[in-house]
Amino acid sequence: MTMKKTPKMVDAERKLRRPLERALPEMINANGQSATAKRLGVSKATLSYWLLKLGIEMRRVALAPGETIEVKRTSD
Image (cartoon, rainbow, N blue to C red; front, top):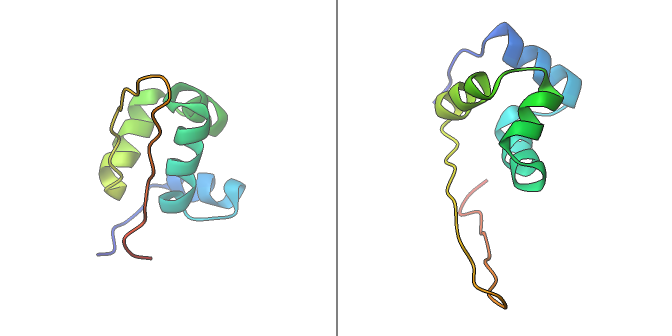
């Protein structure tokens, strides 16, 4: 499914040199939503809208000491 990206989204992709669909999950996992929004020069609300528009899900997981989690990509 192809959707129209906003000019700000296109500008962010140009700066990152890769699609937001790939960049945003990595950035948010590594730095958090606030830091990612700040790095991109957008508000958290705008970043949340981008995630919704791109179909990127955010989930919080609480792990006890010694527990780990593995994320697998089902398709490319």
